[in-house]
Length: 391
Ligand SMILES: [Zn+2]
Image 1 (cartoon, rainbow, N blue to C red):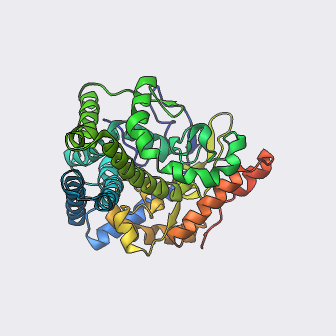
Image 2: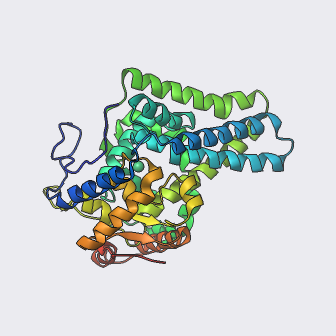
Image 3: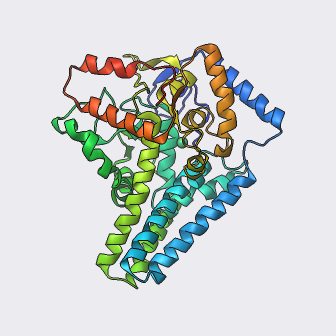
């Protein structure tokens, strides 16, 4: 894997990748350089390392232990249905925790200064059913670079099922998307396990965009990951339980994990204050890369330390998008620097005060995007970036 999503300020313009479309940002990166200078100075001042935090190693051990213990308890020891349901919910939550904390930092190379450690942590995704190789393209590359740009950011592409951007075509059933999408979020992990990665491998595309299929060790990792996951999810449990039971509890665990993962990621970009920028005919966006990230990304519940711990600092999405190679345990510190710089320079810094406020905002945006209205009228309010959203 040779992909690196960090500081892709002139992505496209500087790319030598023939698969990459030449979508470019404005080249004025003065503000981004200033942000980087201030954040670097803060780490120097406090004498902290940006990666390899002991807190991360401890957290990884705790989450993996909960995952392993709840898996063993569910498959071998659950005495009745209620116990099994409770343990299944814990296992689904631990699965999401692996995604938020371990594989996400590993995949962004923000876990450690050592490449091998990052690779190992990223492989935790294969353990829980997703391909870390395809994730590098889908998340670290297409999503992180082109946030909220329809046709480029695969995270806002739900196909015909939902309209997550004003630039996507509206279908009659989108009128009810603010109701039916919530249970569908619970299916996202199952879709990923049983269909998504295989579809991407066969078509050679992620969403609408082509990617380089894995070869050599990457292909071996993909195949081995699937083998391990299907053995854990179905092979081993089938020795001890009926097929119906295995399917019911596979669905429960995956639904809990899928719902948690989808909600946290939607809170960051598919909410009212976030912009949905439109490139011109020459595939140019008129904002610099860092400003684009700030216009399209929203922090939430920054004071909720328990939530921050569990979701791997992904309530500090602005900081994650600007500094994807800094370990998430440092985001509160980075946020103070970034917010102050944004206020000084009159750059938007978007925040929802609580998780519930983010959920409500996501609901309202889904409802608005599902309404049958004239396209321009629909786009204008969504494009206005409010300096600080509170609620
Ligand atoms: Zn990320």
